Figure 1 (cartoon, helix red, strand yellow):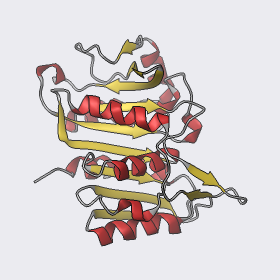
Figure 2 (tube, rainbow, N blue to C red):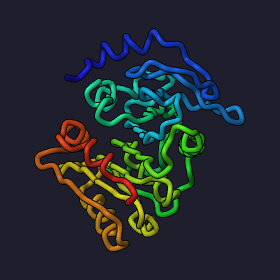
Figure 3 (cartoon, rainbow, N blue to C red):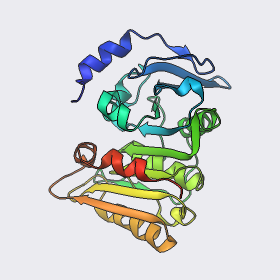
Length: 262
């Protein structure tokens, strides 16, 4: 049973924002407000911890990157999609994990891309890394080195702008993630050649006019030719909102958490 977003906001609004450097026993099922600060820059995020993490049991690390409409500084809006999956007690009991929901600032992006005259998006061949992405990469590595995180089970999921960001980070760190899920995103295909050890699942709307499905197919074909474990799920009669079907699919989390090193 899913927790309504309004109820989720009420729950987390009661939780004070805490420094990323502080660890203590947290109640399972809550997304705690935190900030990662570096050289005067701040990346706000929400973190949820599984029961037993304080005993240094190894858990997967799961990162969810929101879309363009959830950018901001309230450290709440990024929970609009996906967070209810982990707030659900049945799912938490089945797949306990350390879960991070970072929020990209208004003036930044998870990855660089360009809009063209018809409103669609084109990717860059060799884009610079954005400040938000650099802070996120450092935040992920910070958590990866904590005693309760399994470095071999780091998963990243992105929707819309977040899908571009997830693919971009995977290309920059081909050995960091065990699995990557991109929903309505793309990347310059040749950048994925080194991602041979990572599993990918790509969801895309067949009728997407913002990110044409041919862009996602090109990424998928490049991954397959590189020898990566890659799947593509095309959602018919759907535009730039494939994440809605993906997040409600029966095997969304099951596929992600099944990706483990042998």
